[in-house]
Length: 168
Image: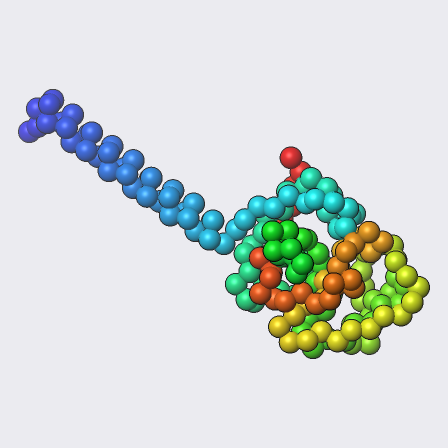
């Protein structure tokens, strides 16, 4: 039978090991979250009305397979590597894009875009997306600086895919 001093020593050891296990698990979870998820703040009106200036985005870091047409991505600007941008993927590698006013066609099919508004030009513009690139535009077509202006987005510039948004 254990006396009070021995019993107290056993309890403190158990408590210490439980705290150590909890700290190791918490550190592991924090590391895993930071490897796969990041947070970004929207700056500007180019993705309105979908995303608003000042909203926070939870971004699943890109590891290859998450990119798809219609998804919203965060990426390093092709012009200034210190600038992160947020745009919607309109076309994937090999796709042919035609924009006529407010209508966007990908491979000849009209793209359903209930999130998009505005047009910049009534002229018809066309592009074919090269391998290793994406065609991205802002939902606010009138005030977005995007693939229509600076060209294709290299896939290696993509930091991740937006999976959730929230306001502060």
